[in-house]
Length: 324
Image (tube, rainbow, N blue to C red; front, side):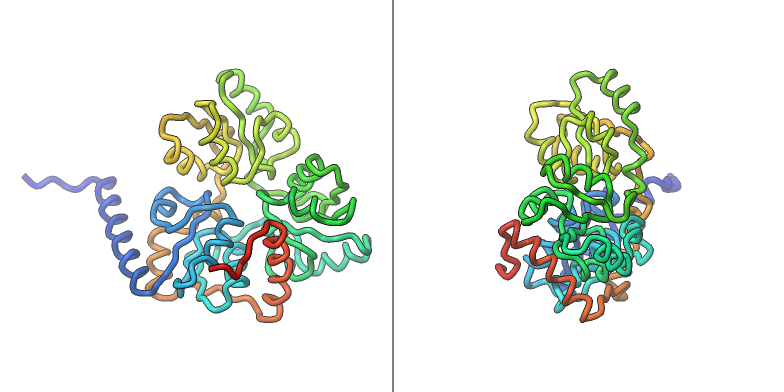
């Protein structure tokens, strides 16, 4: 007897059809699909690589045979792929996937900070737009910010746009880190509260608290480990703990559970979703490959200038971008 297909079963079938079509197009177009740790679970499962911002920046360069890069992330990350891979076509499945924090530091403000603090090196988080990167001395990520600042021959640096990451770097390096702008922040990470985490810790006394350095100083202080998304994943795998309270965007839980099926991960706040990261869907990835949606472009002069601080960052990490 015929039975109507449930909505859940229909969705699974549709998703699998999309995945098959995407994989077919990917092969035909010699495409590479990259996904940030905050992407939807089905996007992470489809991607060739899932990583943090610096990992994704490296991956596009390390795949010389790829002609097309589908960047499932937000705007500044896709721009970075263009800057480092001018010969490749970079597609962004959803043009609305933008980072609000990156928009907090427009390029013209860099000139104002330079006038106020002449001679002080400017370190910019990769969470900035290309034209802003073009005005700084060196870039960094949450994974290497401490190492980058330690490598500079200056006891004071201007650091933007995340004030919480600037605070973290100052604690680790002992150098004066002046945040630009003064209160730049990630709209998702400021949702975490110390009180919520302490309550969860009281309910789960054996759990380790792992947090991203974009969280507030109060949250960082009660964490057992603070690091980038990929550093958090590595720590969870290597730690002897079996339970973790996780203070970063909810998308990372999929990777954490996949890589550590016998461990328990508790979100520090279940409402910590980045709606911009979630705009990339299987349907949009399919259309990106099928119809060249949406090509990311960076003006040549800006790309040339922005590449210099990115290359300097990789040099400080002893990474040779020319090594294929």
